[in-house]
Length: 114
Image (cartoon, rainbow, N blue to C red; front, top):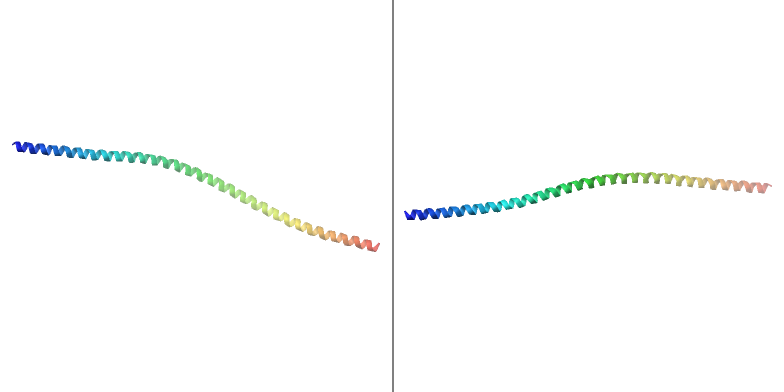
């Protein structure tokens, strides 16, 4: 009977050791879960901050693109108007030179007649 008692005690000791090992493994997994949960929370917070910043940057870019387009339009309109002024100036200069020549011819013609 003593042999049975010793065998039972031996099995009991092994059972307790196995349970302790299982608890240790469970505790390690639990620590890993906690670390990963903390990392997850940090990443989610970072993601929220980055998403907000991305939205702000997108809004800023949109406003600046609109502003740039307004500048482009104003520049094009101003250049077109300036080219018209240059063409008009050239036309005016041509007319002025022609009239000057005509006046000079008339003046010379009068002087020769007189």
